[in-house]
Length: 605
Image (tube, rainbow, N blue to C red; front, side, top):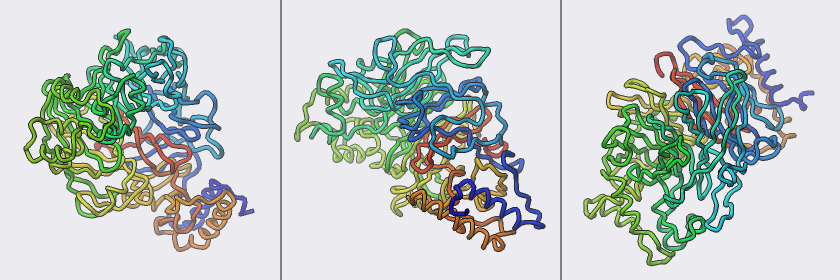
């Protein structure tokens, strides 16, 4: 019988064994479906949703009245047809801001993930990539200069909801499409006051040709003054582009019908007049050129934090000259000083901000235009590494290096360029001094764990979420981990049985569903069944030793215990008005990817 146990049956058996082993010890195991037995001052982590096969959670956005939007990006069969090739939608039937802090988590499916599961309400699909639009195009699909579609509409990312004037139940959803060339679409939607479901009134793509197109549009935010800010991720390598025609030069030239310029891509794009018949994309060159995951504007409407996705990246900040105007300002980059130790669950960073340069949009655009019209050539003109170093040494005639090669320029003047997979950065609406800015780091490895430079952590492939406290000027000076996954997990959640997270250092040890250190194995299903059976036997044999010791590392006793109850590869995140953080995964570890809600300790949001 044991060799036919499923993984979940194994977990249930482990929990029952724990009950027996702790009989008379004062330890009481929880029952299925009762949530977690957290103390009143403990942070909690609850699984709100799971997505479909091969998909990631993108497009997280919460409206003022608690409507949660998210997308199903690049799903594959056996996902239901309604999600293919990529879906834009929202959860109906629940105000997520009203959920209790320790709601009962949704459980992952036993078999193939064919549909989106939620802990409350239900997921409604508004549109799929490739739908027909009002402007007679396919939704989310860019077109070449000769009118040929250049993607299949499978990669919806950021959603930003802009309400109609004076209305909370009608407005416009702006959605990024993460392709090259990129695209942003707009859905005009209205919500029924009776059912809570949405009706789509119009679908259209935005026109980016006036700004020479857009590029790999990833996550984003909506500014305090109501304009969507879409992010151009993975800026092209200018040297490769101009000298050999690589890094996407051919595709963008096909899109434009003329030679494209690498320095026109890799920025934040603000969508002006979002409610008009013809919204206007405007690139904000003063916010720097790098791999923008997203930007978030502080309530002072001048300070902007910007995350840089990839390997060996930089944390940036813009301070605009005037509130509500992102066309002029000073760009900064962070130097990180690691605190003592190397445990990613405990170690944070002191942040010092290095001023790079001040510019206006017009100035930066004038530098960009100097590189227009070039065919690939070994003698092409671009900003060389030597020119960046000359700028850093104070020997350049202008500041173009700071805005066209921002990451290289930042590193050249001492900023830390070692972050790895820096993802969403966000705050709650109306945040003030003492509140927190949150940032997802999808993986803590490679340049963050190579024992070189400013950052020297133990590697953690599952990643982490960090937070930074805002001071009176909306500056941040310290980055600290609050949600860490994998073997370094400092909080777990989503368990079908009660957990007892007594402290950050013991939460996973106290939980019968702590992470599996051997998560990377690729054993067959038959091997997994055998492993499950052996795991139960091992647990039974060692339970006496574990009893009374906080259930230390059941993973060491059973290779069947996996990590589905810790976070893996956090990506998009949003912060709700009460300070809780919704975190979406882009993970090859969890199958399917999961959507979490993290609740800090009271008074620490």
